[in-house]
Length: 128
Image (cartoon, rainbow, N blue to C red; front, side, top):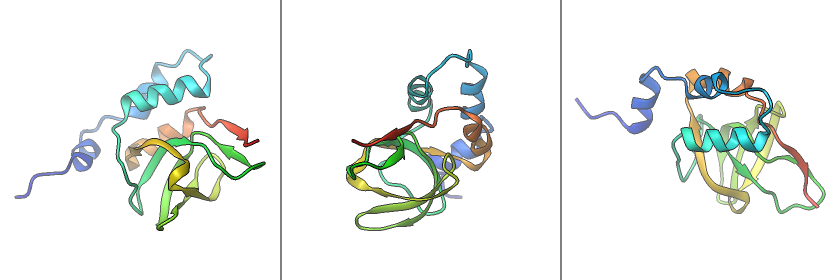
């Protein structure tokens, strides 16, 4: 039988990393604080896959747009220029360019999606 990938092992481990973070919140953490906890807790991947969930740091180059600095997305399409995904904080599809993603992607498995959606780490900003 082939060996399981890291992603498969994490999904079958039964540990909800989002719930672990939520249980450790005091209530006065900023979105920056929570995203730091997420980045320390969740693994990293270089490239997202269609059909998977991720959170990451995003800094757009398009001027004067409102954006979510820490999106939680379901990736729906991958292109040469970037990718499209459903942003759970916005509740709508958004486009993300490769050069606008800071660092790496943090995969979220389906078991963790509900707890991650309940974390108050959306950080809405306007790019000036």
